Image 1 (cartoon, rainbow, N blue to C red):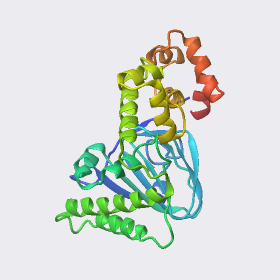
Image 2: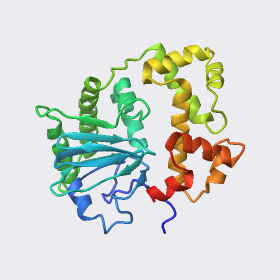
Image 3: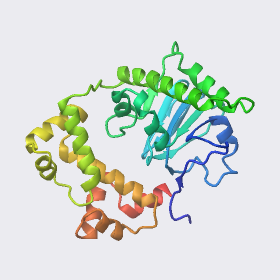
Image 4: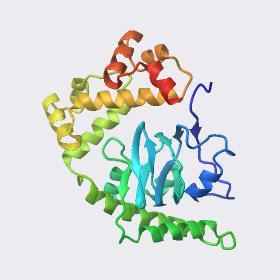
Length: 292
C-alpha cells in the first residue's frame, strides 16, 4: 500500500518557464493514468492553483473538505494545501498554476487585500461562483491561447503578467461580494500577526494566553478579534490550525502518529490521539487509512 501522498511540484514542460502555466481540465483528465500521480487521489500542491470550471458539474476536495462545483465555479488553492479532483463526463475548464516566486514578483501589481482574500485559507472559502455576465472566462481563454501559442514567444512574459494581474483583480472583486469584506484594519492586522505567530509556534504552544501575551494584548481582546474576523474563539482557531497541520503531515509523510505527537508538542502520544479524535471523530491512524 502507498505509504503517503505525493507533494506535487511545479514542473512545466515549456522551455524557459517563468513559474506560471495553464492547462485544461480535459487534458489533465485524459492524462490522469499516464502521469506519476492520479489527480483524483489526494495530493499536496507545492504551488498556487486556480481552477476555473466552464462546463459540467462535480466536486473538488480542498484540505479535506469537498466543494460542489459547476459551470463558472472557481476553486483556488495556496501552496501546501491538499487537493483532489473528481473528473466527470462533460467536465471542462482551465487550471492556472504559478509558483510562490512568481507570485512574489507580481505582488507589487496586486492590491494588498487581494492577497489576503485569495490566499488565506483560514479566512475564506476556496470557492468563488462567477456570474454568467462576467467576462472572467474571456481572460482565461486569452491566457490559454497566449500560453499555447508556440509561434510567438516575444514579450510573452509581460503578457502573462498582465493577464495574471487582470484575473486576480477580477477574482478579488468577485470574492469581495461573496464573502465578508475585510478591509485592512488594526483588528485584521492583529489577527494576521496572531496567525503568523501560530505558524511559527503551533508545535510548541497551543495556549491562547501565550499568543495574546506575545502580541501585547489581553486574551479577551484576542478572543474578541478572532470572533469578529473568523467567527470563532482564539482557542478554536488554534485547535483547527493544529488539526489541519496534523492531517497534512499524517497523509504526506511516513511519520507515525507517536512521532507526530512529539513533533506537534504533545508530551504523550496518547494525549495527541485523544486531541485528534476529539476534533475529528477519528484516531490519527484511522484518518490516514481513510485518505490513503
